[in-house]
Length: 147
Image 1 (cartoon, rainbow, N blue to C red):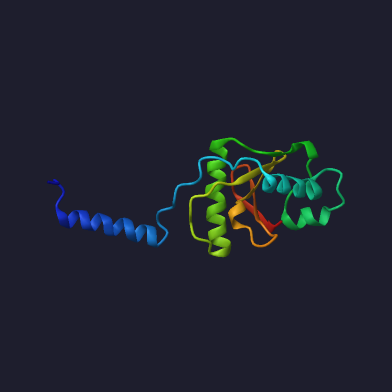
Image 2: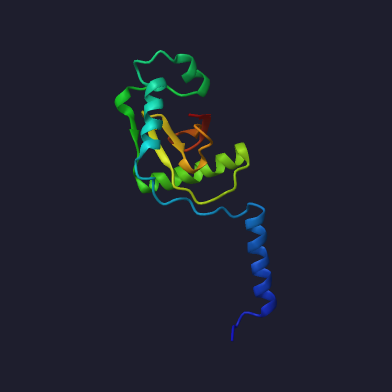
């Protein structure tokens, strides 16, 4: 027999349900990055094209508020702690921008020089388009695009 009165148990369940329903509780973020695959490689290749130091795309960088960086500084990330933070950030931004449900995610993260990260979730692919979120090194939103 439980020591917690039935009325209190129901109230706690109701509060937890309401918190989840109204977005007061966030689902846990993914604990690791996706294993590098064609999506992460494609994302890195696209970033090299318009962020790499030898590219002819300054207007694209300006439009997305991202810096020009040496090609060697555009790298796929696999640190699980960083990926958990990136997944949570991506989740919240996708919800804010597109109304996407808050769910647990496993993401692709690409470091873009010393200025920040590009984050995507391959499960969000729509046809040939994959939403990408740019954040600074403290995971503050900078911009987004579909690549």
